[in-house]
Length: 369
Image (cartoon, rainbow, N blue to C red; front, side, top):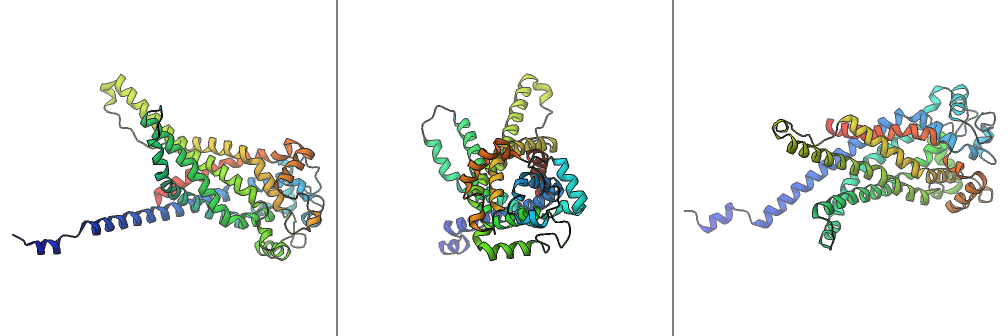
């Protein structure tokens, strides 16, 4: 028989085993996070490049009134149909103007920072969403101890939904803070309506935008509209990412209940049915499309305001139209009405195809990696 000393040598103390197990779980979490980040980056780059022409038309429509007055874009692109418009241009007019005056490749103008931003944003969003979801599990678990008339199953289901919405919003707010300057570069490049090197406001692309803005306003210029953007992104991401996760979980839950009901009604035949707890590609795309349209429409006025504020960067303070976000909301409503907040909403709804494509391709890339 072995002695107690031999047992002490051969057997590890419980604390050591617990530490090893904890380290394994941490490594598994890091591996999963890296996989989420890579899948999200690939999905974001693919989706944004696919819908870049629609997105540029949308931005030009949305900010067509910002090309008037003291905007440098209006000076350099003065002969453009867009800059000479009356604020009531249609998507087809903008599309023809870009094609005839700037060429086919101009539809992807500003796509490089767009891919960088969207790839980074998507990667961080999906990675941080899972991290935030784990982080808020502990405080949310305490809510189950509070008195309630709901059943434990209903409370857990509600907690899962709340976790999805909160983690989506927090992930979006975090990434916006770090990547907002890249979104600023993308907007200014998309609004550069010059047809040639001589008439373009930023002929060297991102470098020209960054240098001119930095020299005029410093780092503050790169964050024009950041406050309202942060609020909008938190709301949008909570609806977009959190809503997709919540609706997807709800559909799987209902499919499970439907199968159980069929098994009770037709027990002999149902025994041969094996339920797959995932959605088909068609179901995923339908859910993603609905979520993207709803979230995009609800948050569109916020997006319009932040982009208008972006267009003021680099201009003298006394010549700027809007003092802040609230002033912008007030003046747009007074001068243009509710329509002013929804300029370009048509192409944006079509562009929501890219949002749905992003969520679906994320799942696909995650499986491949």
